[in-house]
Image (cartoon, rainbow, N blue to C red; front, side, top):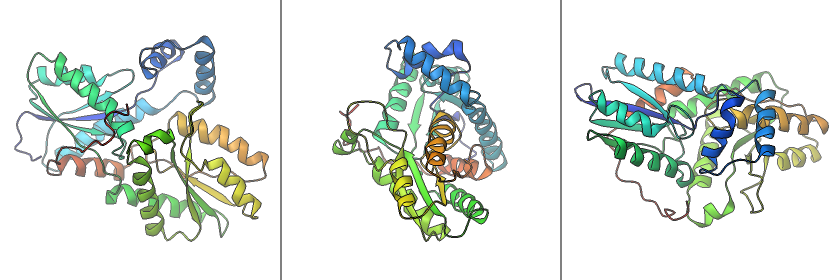
Length: 315
């Protein structure tokens, strides 16, 4: 993309979150693919959101959108940046027709998640296809993903972990965590486990970590097996070795939301402290300028070849 690209825009894409309890039933129905959530499920998620003061996700995404648009303009690429989410509002499928009506003929669509996982990308691909179908004007949409080794992204984690370790006891072990997936996704060829582990290795090398381990977290409450080891298993394993000084760095996520503020800061914190392990977590990138720089570099990069999808039937 260059500053001479007339008719070009950017679509920043995130997961989405409800604003309040009134939104929760419809939001959960979207997450569940149109299935209505039980009253028990709604109450449980309302409890979780209440505990964290509701999610800052949409505020962060709106800030990222504005900062990305401003940065691109400063770099000589004055293009409009739209924000769309796959669950809740503003929906990706609604934003694409709006962009077309505004005169945009080509959108560069970038997920905020840096991991080019089938599990992550397929809902975005479906939403993009639906948005193009709804549009009364022709519009091309190029999906760009897979920036998990971007230097600015890795640099954020290097500096954040190094800073956090500076305030922690010497010898603190670092647990680098990412969201778990059902094990069947690995069997179906989803590259996600390798992508997040490659990020972990790169961050550990850049930060010069002597004691670290990669873990998963936030496994779903289902009967099928999920990828491990879970972060709680490793907290106990290190504690049993006499290592009670631990630091969690959730490199699988980009900003604070339910899986960080509840799953880690509430559930894992209680789990750790009950076992005599002090809970420490590295701050999230949120709308940090280094994250904005990474997104701008993805937007400015040459078009990528079509994505090979060996797990296309694994939806």
